[in-house]
Image 1 (cartoon, rainbow, N blue to C red):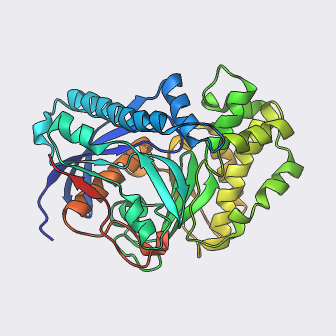
Image 2 (cartoon, rainbow, N blue to C red):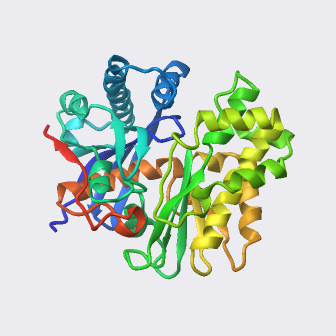
Length: 374
C-alpha cells in the first residue's frame, strides 16, 4: 500500500438526527490521521421531520418523497462541506476525496441496509471523487453492515499498551473493544442498544418545545420506573451475542411513544436514561473480557444524567472500567465518526478492507463502498 498523505472530508449523519457532521482530515497512513477542522450543519425541525417520516415503518411515505429526500440529504451534506471549506479556508481543489455514508433509513441485516444521499451531487458540486455506499458490501458478505467505526478504533484510537473500549453514544450506542492498537485479534464490536434516541424521543413528547433533553434537565426532575426498566431490559436484543446491530426501526419514535405512555413526564425520560446506561454496562459486563477503560464519544456525552448513570453502572461491574471522554485523549468526540468515515474512504481508494469481520459478522474482510468519479 502506497502511503501518500491525502486530504479528505469525512461526513456523518447518524441515528441521533442532529445534522450532518463534516471533518477535514489529513491522512498520512492508515494509522495516522489528523483532524484539521470540523463543523456540524444542523437539521432544522422540518428537515428532521422529513427524515423521521422516512424512518417510520408505519408512515405512508411514497417513492416520490423518498427520491426527493435522497437528493435533499446530499444537498444538506454539500452545505456542510461548503461551510467546512470556508471555515478552513481550503479550496475544494485541494481535496482528494469525500467520504459520504449517507443517512440510514432502514437497517435490517442480513437482508438489507439502505442509505439515502446521492453521491453524484457532491461530485458535481465540488469536482471531487466521492466514496459512498459503505454498508451494503458487508451485508452482502453476510455481515451486519455495522458498526463500521471499529476499523478506525483499531487503527487510530485504541491504546498501544492496554485494552480499551471505545463507546459511542449516538442515537444508538455501540462499542469497540480493542486489546492493542492496530491489532485486530480479539476485537469485539457491536451495538448495545439505544443511545440517546429514546431519551430524546421521550423528551419531545413530554415537552413539544424540545428537540432533545438539553443539559439533561428533564431527566434530572424524574425517577426511573424500575418495574418498567426490568421489562425493557428483558428484550432479547440485549442478551443476544455479538455481532449485532440495531437502529430506529427497533429503538425509535414508536418505542419512545410506548415508553412515554407507560411512564409519562420526566420519569419516562429518566427511565430512558437508565435503559441506555444499564444496557451499555450490561453489554460490557457480559461480553467484554477483563478490565478496560471506557472512552466515550457522541451526543450522549453532553447529557450529565446519562454520563452519571453510565459511570455508576460501570463502577458496579466486577473489575475496573474507568470512564473517560474521547476529547480528553484526542479531539472533540462529536467529530469522531466523521473522521472514521474519512479513514474508510481512504482505505477504499487504496483497495484495502474497511470492515472488521469480528465486529460485523461478515464472511471476511471486504473493500467497502463505491466511487463516484470527480
